[in-house]
Length: 88
Image (cartoon, rainbow, N blue to C red):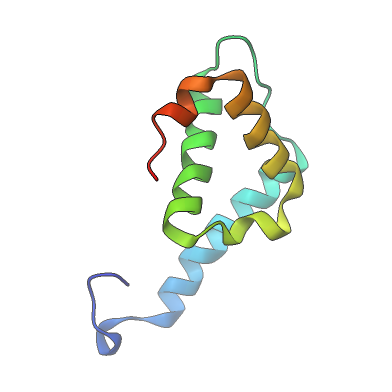
């Protein structure tokens, strides 16, 4: 959407991709990943994806996923370098 003018955007495709994100968030909401002393690549990937959603979509995901909001806060508290390197 960022690079294409309105006449070249295909709403069904955009909606399809947004649905994938929503389904993924729903799965994570049902079973958030564990946060260990040393995070694994899966937890880091989830934290980065949520950070991207905050940056790109102004945190719109947060309203419908309170457990993941809490998970991200716990991850950030456990891994301070995550917040230090976060894009603002």
